[in-house]
Image (tube, rainbow, N blue to C red; front, side, top):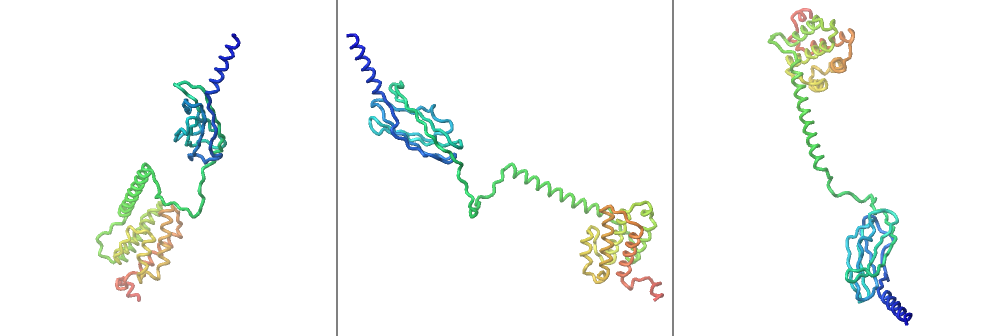
Amino acid sequence: MKKSIFLSIFLLATSAAAAQEINVVERRAPQAVPFAQPFALQFILSHTPGYEVTLDEDSLSKDFEITQLSSSENSPGTVSYDVTAQPFILGKSTFTVTFNLVQNGKTFASAPEEIFIDVARAKTFNDPNLREIRSPHIPASWLMWLLALLLLAALGYTGYYWYKRLHERARRVDIPEDTRPGNVIALSKIDALLDSGLWENQQYKLFYITLSDILREYLWRQFHIDASADTSAELLRRVKAMPQMAPLMYQLREFLSSGDLVKFAKAIPNEQIRDKDVTALRKIIVETAPKELAPAADKEEK
């Protein structure tokens, strides 16, 4: 009698346990997906009627982010789960999920699932016909630094320009009130420079600065050409169209180049170079002076 009672109890327990079932009867999932691109999965489950099927979120793989989740009851014994996931790992990965059979907050059965998915790199485009249509993006902080740098450069250039102008004016030979012809004044200043002792004291740069200023002063006095702040190239362009200077352009160019080497390249000239440059300047002054201004002694000799 006892055996029959125990057998009945065992059969009832077995039938009750067998009634509480949950199974995944169908699953739909891609075998390969691109990195960081959402993809869809679907699970269809059969279960014992009268129970609720829930998804255990703690069982989800950490390599995937669930962006959308929904379920629908197909019949009293079947339910569908639609999942949208986004992969954040490259290579072969496993998507895991567990469904629970629940009633009154108590879990009676579970159905774990594993799906192997190959996550590939996102597709890029190397088509040479594609071109960027967006405007260049410059971060605001970099743009402010760029504007500040341009402003500083403009201020620096302006300061350098005015410093150069003032420096040139400061070292320019002052033109005194002198009624003598310009060629006479220039030739006398060359003689005074040679007697000044600058050359003997090895002040070659100051010697050539003064020699160059004699030429510039002569051009102002004789032809009203203000070349006081001109570079050598600018001075050559100024006098290029002058008929008086046309046959002397070679000598003038050589004179200015020789002076620039001493003034800016710190070249040390010898006496032969000095005499050549002084002779060239004298020739330029004498041959460009108006004939009517030639000294009376020269006219008597002729």
